[in-house]
Image 1 (tube, rainbow, N blue to C red):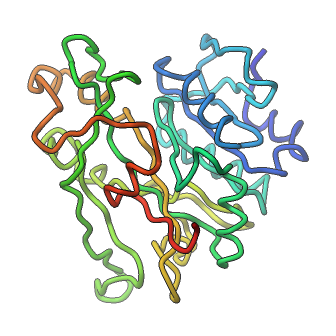
Image 2 (tube, rainbow, N blue to C red):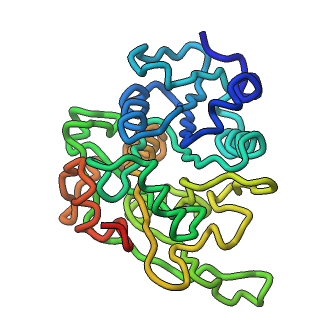
Length: 289
């Protein structure tokens, strides 16, 4: 039985969930929920919270590590609000957030667990990690009309760029070690994407602390935690490989009939391996070898 609310789960399981690392998944629909949960368990998250409508069913084979919570997933800012609720209850806990049909990849995740990653990152005096949202899409929309296919997943190998992130409090001067990143389907089909949703960067792996807030643009209220690297050398980054944008473009009536395929000359088949993402420059191992 699902927990009736996130508050109920956090109150009952606070001590266990606080051990971390913890993942929070918002299921906007029923697409690839089980594969998303299985991936998070595989890479080493101790607990996974699934926020989902009451009717959603999940596989029982996750060894008690998945906690299902009945949630209004279509409320404005539902994921941000839930993450902020968890931050307030679980200070000191490393956490990750994503949607269904999104898969966190980090350097060497095939042989190393997320706890090892976060231990090293902590030793580097880093409390947050930049993640790039890399759009995945099915190669044949005639066969996979919702653009989701684990066996025929593609991504863009180029077309990514960054712009300086300006600080309105300092006469719009660039912020130190912060950039806005763009690319993928949100760049190629920008006429169908609101400007405020075109960025592909998230701070989606971080250590909660008192007073910290996740903001609607998926940055954190602590500016240092929004930086892509530390002051002394390159830091680790990770990738969230996501069918979410492709799925939305195929669901929205305004874009569905305008797009016959997502593939273009710079599409490559996704190997579901971190080395491919590092080779394409889509995540950075830093000093971790």
